[in-house]
Length: 244
Image (cartoon, rainbow, N blue to C red; front, side, top):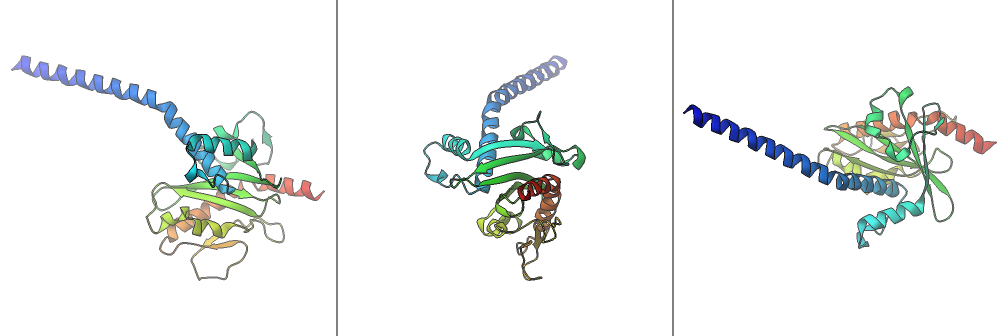
């Protein structure tokens, strides 16, 4: 009986070791592909915030198409600190926004991506990150050359309720942000308020939230306030330079 128990124990131990080794090997093998998928997804989101990659559905090679669009329209990127100073030793695409969001604002690395449109105008794209009802909400906000007017946005989530909070990733919700402004007429930062539909009149600093998705809407509101405020010092510097 003792020999039988010993055999079972050794057999189970061996199987655990073998399975662990196989899983580790598979994870190591798949990691480059997973990293590539993450990179392509980020590039697509950046492009979509400035209304590029519109013909993705017709592309024979999705990855190649996204890379070509990114090379064509994203002409630069850099990282700043909360004082609006450019950091020369940090690559924008390598910044993990989720991790940066956990730091005090004074310690954050803040990426900016520059898109150049076919007419020669430029947009400045920044990542945003926050929390919804059930998990993270995130995306990109693109600004026009005045560093104030929103050119476009792209939002997504990890677990919001389908038909309610999950609607933040729909065109109907995102289209509202186009043309909205994050500074008021006095130059004060006011962000963009996501409000309950029908509660107050619309203006250039407000968008309608999603009926039944109030908590997710509040999360998007807080995400924009927290993320965009980190860039205010830089935006003001750029605006002042443009006026000189």
